[in-house]
Every structure is written in structure tokens, then in C-alpha cells.
Length: 370
Image (cartoon, rainbow, N blue to C red; front, side, top):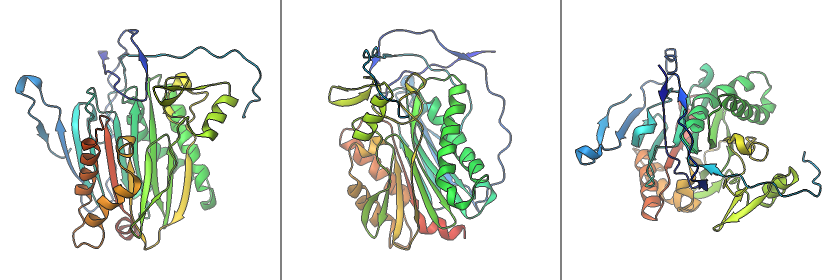
């Protein structure tokens, strides 16, 4: 029996038009196969809160664990408007049924996550992934934060499939080709998602721990910041059309960038220049990530992965200064409390966007998987 899944786009990435579309229908997905045995000694603690039912006074309900082309003189292309539409997507879940959640709280071995739905309403469009002992290799771990726009479908698909695709690409290549493997993993995930004909897109930031190396990649404006001896070190650059390189790439491919109400946008609509998905802008909004590889040394204390809901309001060094007292040089690190403090700080400064923060204690994860 077909089901209609509808969500209202609330993302600041878009400048939607009021045109209406019919609901998109989808068939319920087949039940997924049982997950493989976890390599963890104990499962992560997962706490989630459903959005309060307005008929019950808004009370939260607690839920337990669960080629560049030579540009010729040409006519400026028509502006692309993204309608305020309904989004249909497969009824599959990653870690929890995020759509109806107000908050997600996770404490795992060496990492913690806190996600908070934005004040604009609608569904939670952020997702995350955490896989320890990836591909059966105890020396590997994969983490990611995914900030969806135009619906949650792309973020959910990437959270579910990106790690698998990166690992598959790594199995085909030598150790010196790890950047290429990550790139192909992102591009494969993008191609697979586009085949689904689901609207929307997602920014991504991922961290792969592999034999003592830290491999950080991003597409879009999710960001990775590492604390090195108390100093914030940004490991990614936000992919926005305001960057000269990104704007030139888009224009050389026949596209254009507009400044709308102080925000630079691709074809006047999308505020990021790289992402998974976004079929209507795929010629210009690419899924190719930027990747940085470094050795994890003793002074590499922790890594923060977060959506732009945090970084639009909190600087890199501020974020490190909030997390460090709770996670470094203490008998019992409180990474989850640090995640929550960062989200609360962003909200206090006026953020209305979904905000997701993950803190990874690098030495702990590395030591657990030697």
C-alpha cells in the first residue's frame, strides 16, 4: 500500500517559490537485514525525544535506546526557483527515526553526539553516522555529520551509505590512494542517491580513522575542527559560492552566482556550492569532497564535527574552549555535555537551524582499536 510522506522545507539554504506540487508517493521499504555484530564492548547510549504533541500540551516523550568548460558569450540562464514542496523518501532509518524527533542524544565509546531540531519547525534534516571497527577492521572508525536541505532524504541516504561506499573503494586501492577512495565513495553515494529521484541535498563532513591516520573530508559547509594542544585547527573549508575558486568553477561551467539578501547563492537559490544530491543544480553543485590526511599525534586531543547551525554562531576557537575543559585532562571526560553546551550556545545566540555536534576523543578511539 503506497504511503505519502510529506515535509515542509525549512532550510535557510533555499529561497523557495510558493508553487505547489502534488504529494510524492512511495512504497514502504523492505525490512532491512539484521545488523552485523557490533565490535563494541557495549552499545552506545541513545536518548531521543519526540516532538511534543500539541494536544498534550507539548510534553516531550522520552524514548529508550533504540572542465572546466571554456565560457563563451551566452545568455544568462533562467533563474531556478525551488518550490515549497512535499518530499517523499524511503521509509528506512539509520540510527533512529529522526524525522519526528526534537533531540537526539548519543554517547558511544570515544564519541558523543547531540542533535537539536531548529526553531523553524518541520522535520529534523540533520543526520549522523558512527561506525567503529569499520569493515571488520578494528583499526578503523568512521564518523560523519550530514546537514540536509530541501528535506531529510539526502542526509539520511548519505548517513546510511557513505561509509560503505568509502570502504568499498578503499578495498580496491593501495594505502597511498586513500584520498581517491574517499572521493570516489562520495561520488558513488551521490550517483546512487540521484537514481532514487528524491528531492533535496545534503552537506557532509566525515572523519575516517585508519591505521593511525585521520582522514577528514567535506562537501558543503559542515565543518571539522580539531583541538591541537588547546588551539583550534580547522581541517575543512566551507564550500560556499562566495569563495573565488568555487564561483569561478561554477561560472566556467555556464552557471552563475547571485547575492540574495546578503547571501551568495548558486543560481540565486542554494547557499552551498558542493553537496550530495541537488539534482536541479548538479552541473554546478558537485559532490566531490576536499580531503585532508594527517597523522594522529599525542597533541591531537579531540575532533569536532558539526553542521553550520553551530559554525554560523560559534567560532572555531570558542568551540574548542567549550569542549576542552570537559574532555582533556579529566578523569571522566564529558563529551556529551560538551556537545550539548555547544548547541545551547548556538541557540542562545539566535540560531534557528537544525544543529548537530559530534565530539570524537581521538586518543581514546585510537587506543581502543589498536
